[in-house]
Image 1 (cartoon, rainbow, N blue to C red):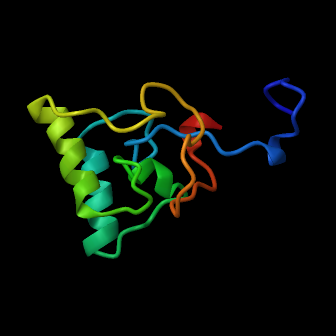
Image 2 (cartoon, helix red, strand yellow):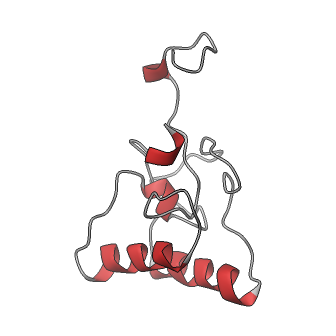
Length: 104
C-alpha cells in the first residue's frame, strides 16, 4: 500500500493520464505520434491503452490522435478524464491499463 490509503496496491485500478500516450507525463505532439505509430507502423502499443484512448470510447483509433492534435493546436476539447492529473478510468470499456509510468 504505497499511497497509505488502506487498500493493497494490487487491488486498486491503475492510475493514468488520458492523452499521455507515450507516458512522458506531458501532453504534446509526441503523444499523437505514439498513437499513430502504434496504429499504422507497428510501434509499441504501450502498457496503457486507456492513456491512448483520448476520447474514452473504448478503442484506440486515428480519431484519438486527431482529437489530441486538435486540442493542442486548434483549441479543441481536451481528452476525457482523467486528463489534468493522474486518476482512474471513470468508464467501463474495452481499453485497459496495466501500468502508466508517470502515475505509479
